[in-house]
Length: 193
Length: 141
Image (cartoon, rainbow over all chains, first blue to last red; front, side, top):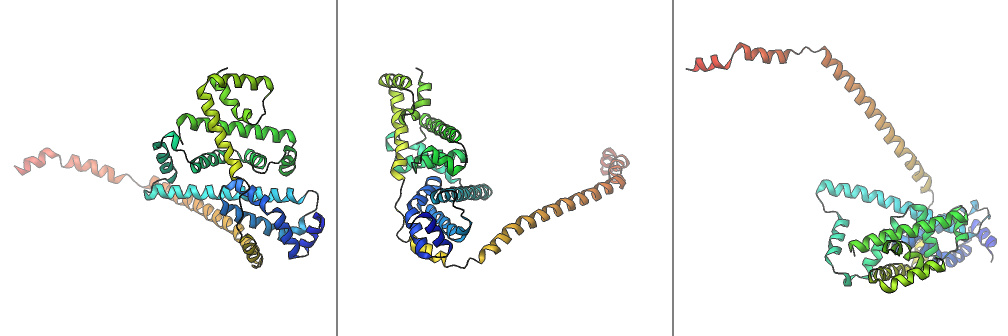
């Protein structure tokens, strides 16, 4: 079954075609979401949202681009929205903690971290540091970097997904790496892990 | 080469994105600089995390959960959309009403202050003049 048949099947509500689509692209969608949200449970929930959106809006698919491009776009948009909402909730939660006299969780974590010597850096601490560094990147840099590093996509495909020029993708990834390195260097100097 | 310029290029060095000349210069520097080597190891280990964590195993219940959600009635969507639009509209109206009410209240209060005579202040000052503390103490004696 080629892509157009698959989409036609989904447009007609064929669940077999939908299952085939999910089986083909599940790993790709979950991995893309995971690269942005850094949580497997959240990534799976978001991937399900992506497939549900595909099932419900398959009629809008014009076939100008590949299914994978369409899926990547929805997955990155949904993941970014999720992160934005989470940040907003976190902001209000920290406000609440300030007023209720609760301790800020993040500062608690960093306090614990600074107490530990260099050789005790665990994988989870390293992961946490990398995720925080990626989260600090501007959104476009984050998408380009995630698609390139987590999905191993070539710059040309990233340009198609993000609907920007190849030169812009090169620039975004270059700046993303520079920013990441700066943050990692800062952390390395301060021995924050 | 300075340590700072080496640090700036190490991520590109790891990804083989540097011209040959710069690459050789970095390698020469790394041979004699323990701190830069240590940072290279640090950054390498951080970037390897991506390799380790990408392509995670999806839950075996992924399909079951997806199909369960697929069978949910999608009629809730327009209602959700309505709420999403109505909520900011309601709060905007509430905000405008609050600002308007505040302005009205403020203008009423200021006009009241202008018309009001500062009688109480004068009264206080006159109190002091009418009954000086010296005469009060003399009365006590």
